[in-house]
Each structure stands twice: as structure tokens, then as C-alpha cells.
Image (cartoon, rainbow, N blue to C red; front, top):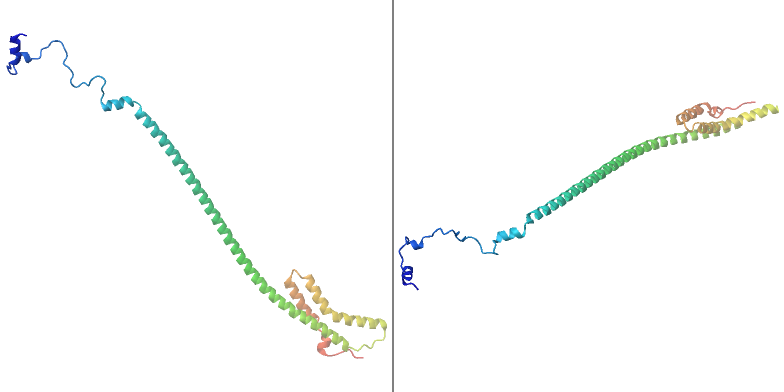
Length: 215
């Protein structure tokens, strides 16, 4: 070993010591920030190992968004159909209520007409009963009046004609009432008028006057 070089190594001449100066010997200074071979930073590893992670997440999000949009569209269509069904049901219910109200009004009008018709029918029935009783009394009056008449005719033909007229007079009230009722079944006003005419025309005058044909 050289003693002079050892002494130089042990001597410190300060920062100006020419032996400490870095000379330009043509070699690049070592990169102290570079990692050793085979080592990588954590974020670089993640980026290197997952190059398409961002793209895959975007596709999944797009598919999920499309599915959600389809679900929303289907839900809107279902809601619209439900609303249309509810509106149709409401319209049907309103139509049913209107029909029920119309039927109720018709029923009330029919009941009123039936009540009026019943009242008129009752009055007409009472009037018919009174007139029928009068015609029955007319028949009885004619029978009694004809029985009081003394027939002094000896001619057979004249006697037959007299007897025929008497029995026709007795049966005239009943015949008038029956014919009038049958011929005026669809015209109650005409029936009433003709029955009143019969009351005047068919009055049993022999019974009312109490007279009979003398000899």
C-alpha cells in the first residue's frame, strides 16, 4: 500500500478539496428516483392490470340505464292503460247511473200515469155502476108499467104486436146498455155520452106516470 495515498485519504481539506469534485468522465449520474428493475408503483400496477375497467363500467352503466328506461316506459304504459281502464270504468258507471236515473224517471212517470189512470178508472167504474143500476131500474119500471096496461084487443095479430112491443120495451134498457158498452170499448167518452142519452130516451114513462091503457 502507498503511504502517500493513505495520508491523502485521511486528510480533509474542506469543501474545496479537488478530490471531492465530480468530474465529467462521460458516465451518466445514477437515477436515484428510478425504481429497481421489476418494481412498479401501485397506481401504475392497477392501471396496467385493468386497462379496460373504465370502458367495461361504462357499458354496464349504459345497459343498466337502458333497462331502467325500458322499465320506466313499461311502467308508464301500464299506468296509462290503468288510467284508461279507470276512465272507461268511470264512464261505464256514469252511463249506468244515467240509465238508472232515466229508468227511475220513467218509472216515476209510469207510476204517476198509472195513478192518474187508476183514479180515472175508479171514477169511470163508479159512473158505470151508477148507470148500470139506473138501466136495471128502467127495466124493472118498464116491466111494472107494461103489466098495468090492459089489453082489450081481440085481433090475434094486433094482440101479438102489442105483446111484442111490451116485451121489447122491457128489454130495451138492458139491450141499449149492452150494445153501447160493447160498441164503445175503446171510446170511454162516447160510451158515457150514449149511456146518458139512453137514460133520457128509455125512461119508463108508464111507470113514472102510473097510468095504463084503458079499455
